[in-house]
Length: 296
Image (cartoon, rainbow, N blue to C red; front, side, top):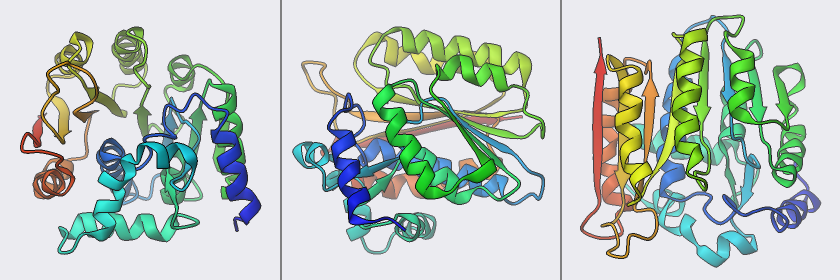
């Protein structure tokens, strides 16, 4: 298991990163993303046939909520900390929180999507992680080494968009793909759409999950309608807005998940849980959720 030296090394390596996620781990956006991912992977596990999980922007994989970055911003206090302290959660949300508590090596850590996924996939399933940032990749390597992936997992320090295309179609013809860029550059919005177009030409039946921020900027507002055009009859959109957009247009007031070829149970599961998540994670009276889907 993890030693105190390992936890110290998490803090040391995070200090060298670009901090895109070390500051924000465990916040409201992580809750929406990881809860949805947990539901999707649970559904895929219901069939015996193996599948692949592909993560295009893996990040560090595991985050220290006691570290300087998380403590400076404290976003986790309005995210995972609220869920852990809440009573009378919807059964699925309570099960999710219990699951996280059971698979995290220590209470002061929070998972990235790679850590969550590797705890859920079975011995015959495969994990493929991409991370381009050198320091993030080193951190990911160390954390996944602790997870003892063995032959199940392959990590590559490569561009995740191109890496995804190189893997399609996966041999078992079943896959969950998470595309989760930082959207720090405007080109990320276009690359997400273009990559999905190419991916679906090679592997149309894949379950593609896209996380995106809800911002006032035009690229963010237009992304959902562009994604909808890719698969207008097989999609699910879930957004969780935690506060009213600021008058200066600065900052992220919510986030969304767009899923192409979603599990048929997912809409009802989110319909059951999003109202409670919105209430629990609300930061002002402008908190709301969006749930739109079509599955023909």
